[in-house]
Length: 397
Image 1 (cartoon, one colour):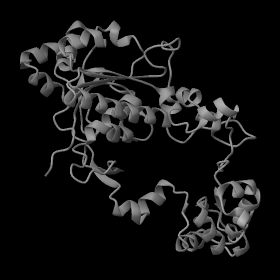
Image 2: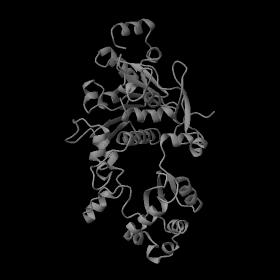
Image 3: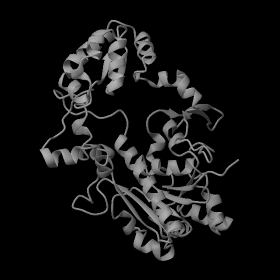
Image 4: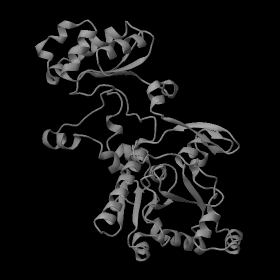
């Protein structure tokens, strides 16, 4: 079997909750040795978030899969000494404390690179390591708000709404993993030293805002909330079927629009030269959406989907998790895998993405028990059984 692509990369994680741990989850799924540092006795608060199996979050088992858990009291000098030894052997450190916390612990980048000049340090925070807001607390919701996502999400006559997941944290985690791998590439291929990857949650979200900046700069245009439609891209909307199911229909390509109108019995609109391009369609968006609404509401969802798929029009019901787990596409792509939990229970978890044909990622074990790997990791650093016992007695581990 081929090695995973990040085999041989050692990552030390000082993160909690979502952004930092999701970043290292990606690395662990693709073969990096991820050693997660947790507070003795409590650990990452995510261990207790949302639905629990026994006393442990099901989310934890996914977010921390393939990671090793080491407990360290970073308020003790002995704990900091262990941390420094681990970092000296690492390729990447990931942390998502408030800026300045690592420096107060003596674990800032300037101090760490003296012993490990090739170290890549990934720092996730609400507002980044510089600027007037750097010391303010900032969760993903704040990043989504300041980065532009919340402003444009929802309907124009209602307050902004959030997406159903912590999307700001997750986007930041993806940028962080990408930045870390770019820094490793520079170090290993170009002969460069290590460096800091500075990810601000609001900037991670802001980077996804498409053409918002040049449109405002050149035209003073401010994109507003528009519900399920995207002005300037017509038709693409959500419609409700006779049996109350919500269905996405995307007919905004020129040829696709013709096929869509033909499929729903509106050949007159398919042949209308004024609707041959997106600009013409957008000018008559209300008419087009009314036409599609009228057709969809006269049919059950399964018929809507079958008719439009036969016409090669992009369409899909809006899936719940129950729909996903029953869907043949998800099954064919093996997007669910089984995790063996402590005590013998088994639970489905999302499959690993992206798919690499030669060196795919995968799950070796679910999120570990608190401190499960402390002794083994300390032994590998040269600590004896007596040393480990003393550190435990002193509350360091």
